[in-house]
Picture: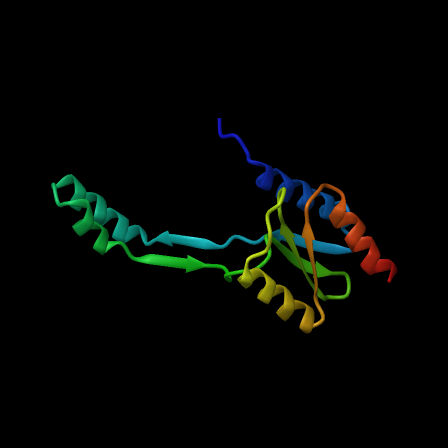
Length: 132
């Protein structure tokens, strides 16, 4: 069984918390990262099995990037169609430069952004927006 880390747990709790505020917003997990094309992985594995050195076989792998670098862990929209971004941070974690830039761009376009560090913060944040 896979053990969930604190970040994953807080992301899930925050999404559930927002889901209970269905009249205020809709949110979802925003995945970002990199993987490899299926065809390049098949060729890579075949080359390794045939005895080709790892350094040489790795050249065949073709990366695929997805999501926007620096975007929030959770994104969605409010009842009035404005965008929200919720960035989950644990302990003393801080935003990267890309995350700060994404936050500034979102807020410049009328969206809302919040760094969430504990369960319950998203609810307070959304209620604060709603109650103005």
